[in-house]
Image (cartoon, rainbow, N blue to C red; front, top):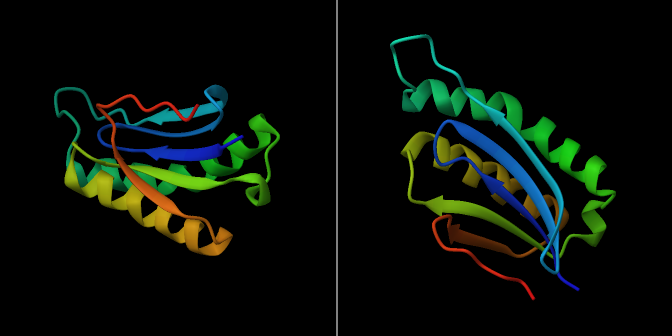
Length: 116
């Protein structure tokens, strides 16, 4: 059984999910909502993601009942998307992969991947 944690932040939505052999155990998200008429800009969107992502990691672990010791792999959105938010999510994914001593995989979020 493969247990993967995935971090996604290619645009205005940031999310953390946990899957075990195709079963979604957690799918926690936050959306950056820009001021009316402005649209979402890379810097502000990345700041939003920075403020939310650690809480989302904790929430996903809690919701799933999985501890970092049980995670087999850390995945993150490598692209396509907005540069600044992608970099923020990749940075957090790399840090938790190093702290938890797990392999890391960058994925194209437009391609559906099955772990089974």
